[in-house]
Length: 373
Image (cartoon, rainbow, N blue to C red; front, side):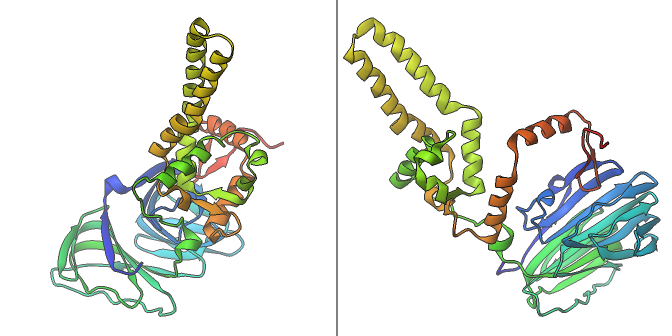
């Protein structure tokens, strides 16, 4: 991140999910490609409703949390540590690894931040006259984010001379290099919840490598010949270099998209069957064999590679990585892939779709479809 950027997140941008105590709304996450359930984010802003008198919070051992009450009253009991009673617009900061239970029906605002970084929430009450909120200072961090959430009323915010308006439920996020925050002023009425987040971000550690898209070339076609003809069990025993290669997430998703529909299999099989019947009526002996071999060569070197070329990201070879030179993020993805039991994942997904799961306030499953004895 080298330049200042900002965005107002509105209802269409939010990610809403149900949990066993109410609903949770992800307002913003960084980096934007991160997924909460994969725990590969630096920070996350969200709002949740607790519609039951008692709720258990997720354990997030690698994160710190700040919770502010937007509506209602709550008691947060951090097991064997301490307790906090909060009214509207009061907050509590705590270790995400605590065993925390809440007592009370509330709507809250949450900042979840990876350990080793700094994050704060406070309340700004805008008025008819322009005001410039003071900023915290932590020069040891490289990046700085300000978040402004409109709880009620409205606010007009001017950033480097450009004015915008926030209405209830909207979230403004401003990202910049630390020490280079833009000139900002606020007017309006009601209450804004402000987040100040100081952090270090190195893309190779936290997210996938961004590879600019390019037009297809002949080298991409050659790579697709290899890809199209090595998607079968045991391929790594025949093509030894597969053992030293890793396909990034974007390329893997494209391959799965093709293979999930069995497109290359059906095209190859249908063509073989059609030509076999056609050839039997017109050719004999070696001519019929050559006819079939010709079809297989066309399928291997033209049809299947062309199908792959239309779907996979280009340049293809930049998405094929040396397994010994992966970034920390890519290494974590590889380890997760190696630990994944695809058959079990499909079974659990089946149970999830049947409605036999329950979820915590951030969408985690907290009860498996079987009982422990």
